[in-house]
Structures are given as C-alpha cells and as structure tokens.
Length: 292
Image (cartoon, rainbow, N blue to C red; front, side, top):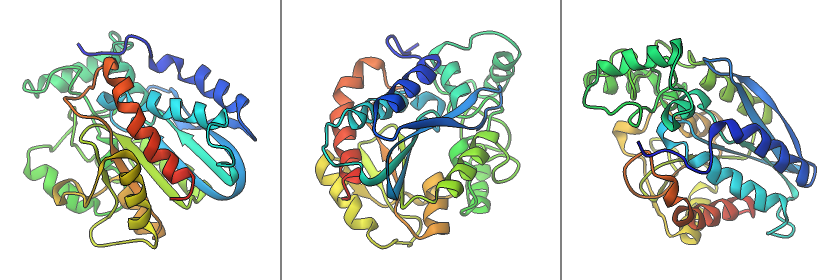
C-alpha cells in the first residue's frame, strides 16, 4: 500500500496548533465531528476584512493534500511573504475527511468502522481497498454532498452504478447528510470568505467555474494561480461538475471558488512525491493569498 511514511492524520492537531500559535493573530478551533467522532479542525492566520478559506483532503486517498496545505500555512505564518497577511485573514481546514485519511494511511486497520468500510468495499472488487477509498466511513463521497446540482450529480452517478454506499462516487441520501460536509458548509457560512480553494489530487489542473457561472475576478485570479504554478486552468468536466464544494460556493456566493488537482499519478500519491508536488501548490496558493 502506498501510504505515508513521514506524516499521519494523527499529527494534524499538533501541527495545526503549532502553526496557529507561531503566526500573526493565529487562532484554532473545531468546526464539527466526523462519522467516527474525530474533531474537524481549522485554524486562521492574519487579520483583516478580506477572508479566504483553504481546504484539503476532502477525499480519503487524497490525504497528501493535508500536509501540502499545512506546509504552506507554516511558511505563511513564518512571514515568507512579507505583508501577505496585512488586511487578510486566511482560514485553513486541512483535513476535511479525517476518518477516510486514517483508513487509507493505515492508521485505522481494525474495529467496527474499519469492518464496515471493508464490507462496503467488498461490493466493488475492482477498487483496491483501502487505496481506492475516497469516501467517508459511511461510503458517502464528501465532494458530491453540496447543494449545487446535487440531483444532477445523483442522476449521473446512479447511471454509472454508484447507487449506494461505496468507496467513491456515492452522492449520499441527501445533500449535506454527511457530517463532514455539513460541518464545512456551516463553517463556510460562518466565515463568508471572498474566495475558497479545495485541494485534491491529481492532474495538475485548476478548475474555476460551475457550469457557466463566472464570478467577478474568478478567471483572472485563476489565471494568476495557473501562471504561477504551471498548472492548466480549465472548465470542470460536466460529469464531475456538480455537487462539489467549490460548485456550491460559486453558486451561492457568486465569488471565486477553485479546485486544484495537485500532482500527477495514481491516487493515493505516495509521500515520496511530496517534494515534487509542493512547489507548484505553494505558488498557486501564494498567488491567491497575495491577491491574484
């Protein structure tokens, strides 16, 4: 199994508090609980009217995006970009799917929740377990949970055979039925950011639209991130262009929202790829924080 050798989900709380305490106007807290009862953690740096929300690890086997985001936050806290936080407060939710990340990295390898996931996976023998797992521990894909074309996403995924709990692509019984998605929805409402980013893997591409909606400034900011990182700026493919986190944000707020597909390869990307992936992600996130 391609899992983490130098980072694990259980380290998140310590890293988060250390980063928040080291940066300007840092604070940290929880915004909900996962299926397994794990704390959903966030932190913030800076102070100002401009607010951004950067998120990662919505999908279990994309766990590497959590340490990518934490590395960037650490550099931001250390003042690598002088003045970046003047008038800006950046919120981070680095591990949206903690239970799934623990499953894929091998931290969760026994017990009732593990056995339930294994039983779900047995119905999909072509998907390796746990490496192919994207969902939460109830088999709901968290990035198909948001009220933006959810019925269309359901139609597309059901037609492809994803009609019940699965390692991936099951939309759930209703929008926001998964506690992890519901909690992030509420956190976003509370913060009301000017811009959101969701880190995923893989593809080296930045998606910036929902359907034909183009929030003011969204293309220009997306282009700045693409130019800085070397990633492509593209429209979201229709088949995967509904019910995602950034889709809902764009629809509800008419503000820029982005999915950044980090790195290249087969998920889960191995920890050995971290060093090669990080520079582009760093450049894209810095462009967003600095105002595109």
